[in-house]
Amino acid sequence: MSVKIYRSVHELKGFSLKSCPAMDQPSGVLMCPPDHYQVLAVKNPYMAGQVGAVDRERARAQWNHLKEAFDAAGCPVSLIDPAPGLEDMVFCANQSLAGTRPDGQKVALLSAMRHSSRRREVESFEAWYAARGYRVMRFKAGGHETFEGSGDAVWHPGRRLLWGGHGFRSDPEVFERVADAFQTPVVLLKLVNERFYHLDTCFCPLTPEAVLIYPSAFDAASLELILKIVPIVVTVGEADAGARMACNAAVVRSKTAILQKGATSVANHMLALGLGVCEVDTSEFIKSGGSVYCLKQFLFDGPAG
Ligand code: ARG
Image (cartoon, rainbow, N blue to C red; front, top):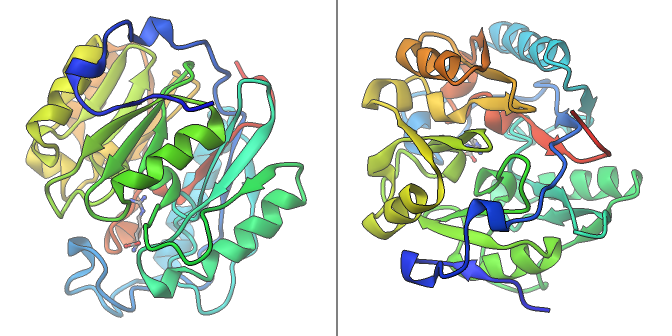
């Protein structure tokens, strides 16, 4: 069965958030310890000038705090072993997209990474999911299109709907496969600002009714889609979106937002929406272009609150 991809507001006839079936929220997260984390080559604008600049001890302490924050928010953390020589493996959002199909089957769709230095990461995730009862799906061997997992495919909380981002790391064509793998409609958004190279750097669902966005990361048709579909759209200013990667927050069970410290106005918006706010410091990871959201993969291992 082919599942719908929405690319413009003209295609939305009959579609609304409420028309998407309810879906369980994530049951936990998967994280990868930062044993081999470093900045070795520049793959995104955040990494420029940061080669060799990671303070490994600080990175380890920040990662430990983030793990504690997920646990404390009632979101249990599973771990995958870090592999030597894979300095970006710590960014667990990218190697796959985990989720469920409408019949409850757990699925992990493996990514096709844009950069060759990250391709080997995917094998470890394949083995991890296979050992845990996930149906593991992949893209056709020899294909040229790329897909970077939950960096560019974000679940809408509590609804069977995926938001897809393309333009830098993922190709638009791959979302047919994404929609099919999860039997879930995809709203496709085009990213136009290189500093916001993954969807999770400029788009963050806060509650089933509210999202946080950095508007100039999107083209006009994509902004129109977001505004049409989501009742509450909170926008982030340049400094919080860029230097503090505020849209790379993670919201656990529509209750607790975990985000980089210092994005005060974003934190206030979150509080006003009734969320608890937990600030963490991910500055060593922002040097590589990642913060809270991309240091984990949401897992769907059963009903959660
Ligand atoms: N250095 C990594 C890269 O460029 C960072 C990935 C961050 N992930 C994310 N989903 N935003 O690939």
